[in-house]
Image (cartoon, rainbow, N blue to C red):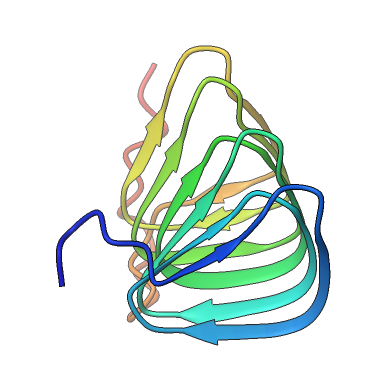
Amino acid sequence: MARDEINAFLGAGTNYEGRLHFQGAVRIDGNFRGEVESDGTLVVGQEASVEGQVNVGQLVLSGKIQGEVAAKNKVVLHKTANLQGNIRTPVLVVEEGAVLEGQLDMGSLSSKSEGTSEADSS
């Protein structure tokens, strides 16, 4: 599968509610409420809104998420991103202008490592 290949697309102006399980990559440009579960990549477009629990391999956010986010590999918050909730991920990329209201845990998702946070530097 090509790196940028989208397997499913939930278009603008649409509303979805429930559980979303997928492989590969999915892009949401509409409104989604519920639970997202995948080892793949979730792309949330600039006009999109997601409410609920997100557990994915990688998250690329340009729109809005309200809820808990866990990403095994990486979270990317573009400048138009608005995330209200907690994030757990080993890698976080934040563009200037992105909004994050919540807590960030950058420990490994597979093992809870205590005392290894580098976020306490002055």
